[in-house]
Image (cartoon, helix red, strand yellow):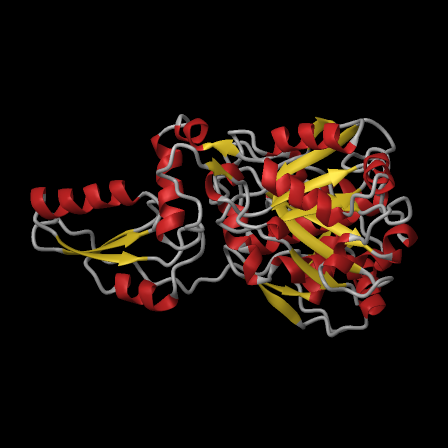
Length: 354
Length: 89
């Protein structure tokens, strides 16, 4: 067995768990013990060299080797078949566009959401329906927590140290959902992002927790509510653009599709109408203004919006494609809006599950 | 007896030892690492250190305030008597 990690022993399970707490090797909850047998089972399943590294996890730079990822995945409750999803999620997070270093340490309260697409989601029991952001499903919980523990133990951004999130959100423990692809009239997220239909993929996007959006009725009525929620003054997007995520429930999507709206039609409408007058935005204060100026000076804020013109309506993203739309949840009255970190990073990145 | 594996890597001890803290900023070279976030604050700090305390300030601007400094910038800052880092916002 080619495992290089330090081997520890304890008299019993209770002592072992306490050791994890003492050494800050857990996020505040108990863990499944990463015994050599459990860890080896995950490595055997993916048939990869345990010392292969996907890269360094910021900020401390611990190498994300297959072995270390397997240890943390076991701790989070993963079975061997969950492990390829954990690996793909970490690969996606290490894409430079995601700026994981910033996401893990910003004062903003974004957390990288793991979105699973493809038949593997159903096969692994990853929930995409009622209560999708909630509890009750091992796939969501174990994959989500396995990923978070890997970031915790290899990256070492702790809330008492360099993780400066002012408030953060509960997704720090686990933040993993699947897209509902069967009860969905549109192409799923990963196909829009270039993956083959029927393939398995993970998309990560750093965002706030889901904002409940009472969204029911005609397309125009649903869009009226969604646009208002998306351009709330507290969102980073309104000040420094970036990307945002809208989760429509299957009934919402069905209503749009029945009346001839494609996903791009919805996206374009949201982009055109989720805007605020510059006076509203200016009233937020000098710090917001300074951010906007900084983004413009850095060339990240498109000049076609004249910020000195009082009639300008400020968009939440630079282009429609930066509004991600997916389908999940129960067939009901609610959608969700998950604003991103803004122009600083956390952007969506997609990787195939191997 | 239960055996299990460590989820972390051993602590790396490859940091350079800190330089001796200067008694005064007068004449000292100061690397002011500009995070490219709070520019007015950083400018004010630069003026204070230069005009009030007589420091020789070199302002090193990071390409992004939300990503780590490039290695050459870190090496550059390490060559000064004093480095101001982590201003943020």
